[in-house]
Image 1 (spheres, one colour):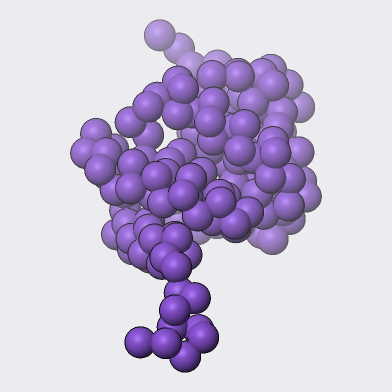
Image 2 (cartoon, helix red, strand yellow):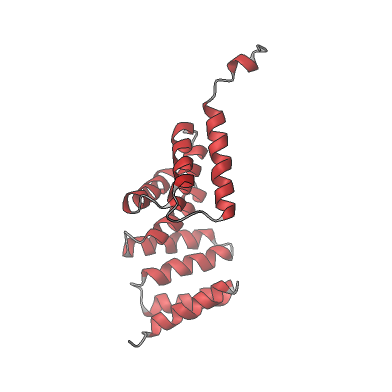
Length: 172
């Protein structure tokens, strides 16, 4: 099967991204999305490229386009959820992560994102449950840094659930 021009551009952009060359990747992906505005993969990768360049606003827009084009595309939903959470849009971020856990219940990254979001919102019990779920999923194990974040979040959420009043009032 012969690759389309957009598929070739996306492949070229992936090579640039893997090499840490984000500006050339962003330019290539801009061409790809102009040629094929219906390519969710191109929009997702364009979001990754511009986010690495520090343009979080455009990344959020590009991830959103990818999700609108492919509402069940798990990597796009996770990237969009993370970007929404960073932007402070907790409701839509939560919905994005929950959508992933409904589509792929064993997706550890979605559970980690949901745990971080719930913890940020002060929902310690929900955060603890999400972090625990992220850590128990063997199907797509977390990278070491993400595993540390999940363990740290689990510990912090667990401690948040403890009654410290006895110690705060000078007791014990």
